[in-house]
Length: 137
Image 1 (cartoon, helix red, strand yellow):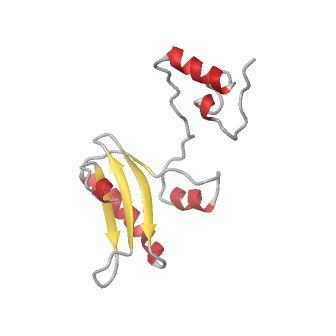
Image 2: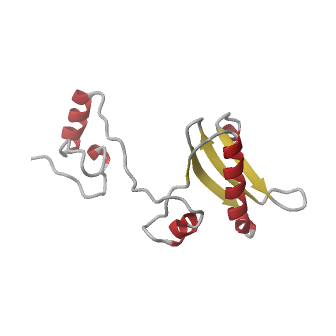
Image 3: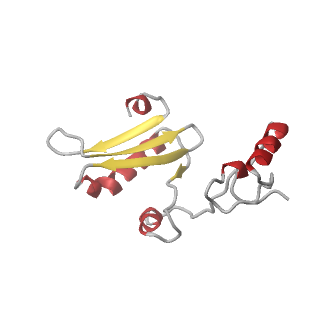
């Protein structure tokens, strides 16, 4: 935590009573955008979550950061997703960039794992241990 907090592109917002910190919200950011990384609290400190996120939004805006990704829930429409939706953010689908820079190494790893090099499912497919895999022909 100390290493994360020391980074120039990390914003930590905390709240507490009586000189102690009961909860924090942590954001990673660049000049182009920010991500809500996580919130941590002691029991009872979770009541500060909304305040901490809004404080983070205001501080990021003051830094000139134009966008903030709050992330989603664990499952579509769960309580966490609903909590984040209430901040008024636009919902966007989760997508991933699936680039392969060393095709020979990638193909070898897929063959070694007994899977195809298809990029439409779990990526990279050779890391799909315990998940539905695309078997090699």
